[in-house]
Length: 355
Image 1 (tube, rainbow, N blue to C red):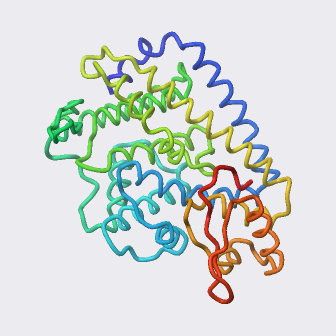
Image 2: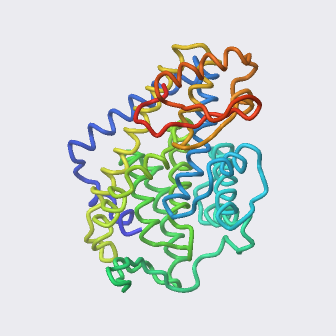
Image 3: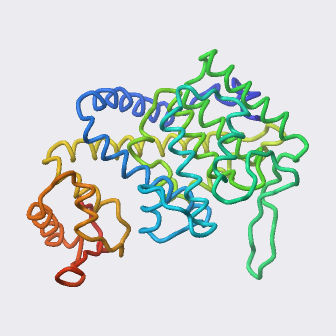
């Protein structure tokens, strides 16, 4: 909460680039409302893809991975997890769905954060929903295997009070309205990560809480575009910005703007992708859109079958599916694997956008 307790000082002079970013995000947010009214079917398909990508990417940032087919089974079908990594991914899916479904009615309190953390670990057999009981400083591994502390997080004994203050200060800042609500959101996430209130799961919780606060502030882009995937794709910049803004945090001498610049840039990218996808999908037939978006969501090397496409394409005939897949093959985006009843397709690793 070292940023929030000095918010007027820390956010007093907003850099010009941040002003531009905030203006672009707010303009896109206004168009988002229009898209929701005019193209609900398109947005439903975007939601389906983003949900899978978010659960996959947020866990991958922390080194938690699983085969693409298993991730789809866990997210789309609610499959039973078969190992610890799958249990972590299933837990993220559960909390992600909770936020998508209930964000407007979820108060910003430490109790809600504890509930979300408990559910994050709900499939693992590990008790969640508890503040850390021991220190968990952030370390890096140096050449040769030695470790070095790069940031000392808040002591375990101080976490309950700091989390109470963090949420009280955030609610007050949002209610007072002196600072843009996105800057308050980014500041909350920075202070949360510096407190590091849990023994494990802090990074994933920060991304779920980001989504929750964006919803509550009126920005729904995280439903349609995976912000977590954008973070995964830029994780070097993510860690560099976090490190720059956490330097001096304990004494209040830190600079939050490297982190806030990264945070706002992520949202600019998310809204840019959102508008591109809505425009792109709205220009084609609904079933063709659904097939193209399904293939776009697959990682390189993923193998799928026509039966998988049927479930996504909502009643498209096999002849239409074959035509669309042939077009994607002609563009070098998928390759056939096998013939006859065992025929399948593989997502190419060639550059380019399915859309």
